[in-house]
Image 1 (tube, rainbow, N blue to C red):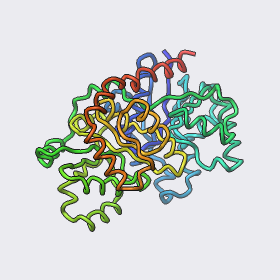
Image 2: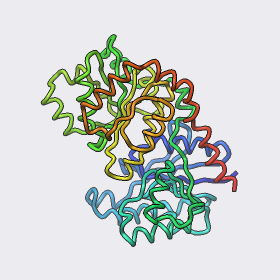
Image 3: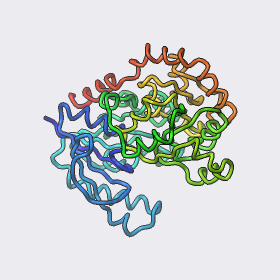
Image 4: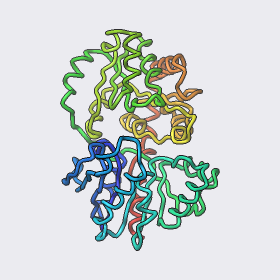
Length: 372
């Protein structure tokens, strides 16, 4: 049985759905352990809520140096701290751009670089050369969708296309079958009463159009919303100044929730809204698991003009795609009304075609990498 080391920098393992899905899939035929740098910067060891062993690290550079500064020194510290734990592993599976030193420097091991996001500063020749150097060292580089690979090819960053694979962020069976409820579920149900609600997740940054999304809800009668995950604090203050206590009567700000507990909210929602500012490549070519998660539970979606979302939603009739990326509140309100008017049609379409977005097809990508 092969041993696989996941190298991860993330806020929390219980909120990172892509890592959860990959680790569970690979653990069926391999021994997987996660080596993580988490937001709390604490050393710990145990088993995740989904059954995968992990070890997290506390870096001295993160303790002593100010946040968001000296990032390269912190990256070196992370590499040197984790490296000594990797000797027994056959495959090093480095997640996202922040772990680039592992595929760049480790030798005599099969290396997979799993890019959750598109690398930044690709116009810089040094960054471009570094990417190509890492590409040579890797067995494979994984991307979230074909649009991102095509973008990197257009930017003349990719030299060896056959090393680049796509793994979509589709929901897995464990997520679909989860019946877990978090500690505030009953409180939410009491707050909701007999009202219908929209499921909103991941509105932590202004590039997700949190104000525009909430304002569209506020302008729609007889409709409430739950916001799962972080929410931009400045935007919330502005919304309260505009709407006062009505904001909290219409919108339930739940905060962070374990991924496997979100189905309890999604299943009872009416639909979901998923928007990204399309002016930067990572957002334009987004791969939002929150969109797929709603669809898999037969909930229509409203999405922006971003190609990966628009193409899927338009092709199968899963909901409404805006002409813009979401910065126009009135357009969102119109889309809400369209979803409500044609709700049964969208639900019927999802029922017919949701099998197109299951994790089972992505499992083949993972197992093929390990079996070679």
